Image (cartoon, rainbow, N blue to C red):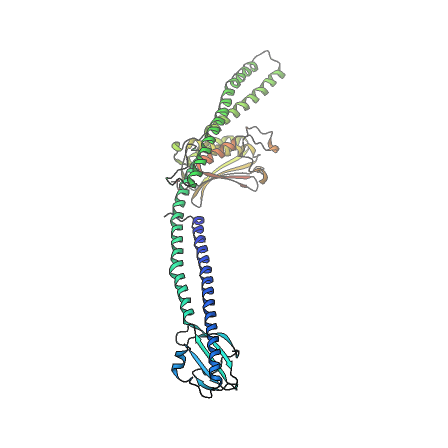
Length: 452
């Protein structure tokens, strides 16, 4: 099942959150503004009523606050007449609210409804009459409470569903983008493995991703052309050098076999022939690397048993190792089948064994081990030589790199570069670790399910 593209989904979620936040702020400001004006209108009205009633009750010793029609007439919720000491005289208001000023100014009091727990608001006005009695009137504000419910319902029924639509659209777009990016990543992985003819797929949307894909495809065409020209130049140079070098080598061999040559001249010719041999080996290795890096097709891949390759190379190199005073061993848990080019895999392992023999002084030990690590086949070559310092391990896979401490050892500096090229084609990783003493090379085949 295709997963969502988290960055795209996160963007949609952020947009939904921003929309919700902006809507909440807007509704809150609107509610505050309307409720404030409505409360101010109620307060002004109640203050005017209080002023009028204070005049009415100023000359009366008896009042009709206990009459239910009084509150209905003046649209009051609570009313009460109190003595100068605050004792209740008349009305349905039991006591004077605390902190209520007796100067005719309105006081807003929040209270909880005992029946349903909702909060309501009451506005009170208190006035001290000329005879020191106290008149208090009050009314609740159901209109403001209703307005608050309307705003909340609008927020729940309008904003939240729209936000969920935003998230849903983001999930759909994220899924589509994830699929397109996955196709592009697969194409780029194939290009990294040498399939330079591949191009990023285009959709019918003609959007920014398609524009980016077209730009990348144009860059890939230029890159393919430059790589092709570079490989052809190196290939041609190496190929053109082989013929004249072979002729020089043949002439040197003829001259070396001449009977009349002095011994010192014969030695010079032998030294020159050795130099020509090394140049021939270098050009041959360059041609080999060019062919591999030019993208040898996976069409050559077959099921290959690494144990058969290791056994064949062990039989080949064991006499050479013995002649140098080295012990070569082979350990394997059993057959290790992988998908690959048998010829190239044999060359990669052969280069590692050859290097181990070349750089391990006698008496020494070279171990070839085949095993598995987390279900991945591993070929391990361990020697008891001088090892490779950490700061030089990334350099040994570069072309023509020679360790300055071992520059007197014969070689072209292309062996490990070939191993790296073969590893790139086959998708195996190369790790270098300390052998204590010596060095350990590991080829770890992580072929993403292509192992058999």
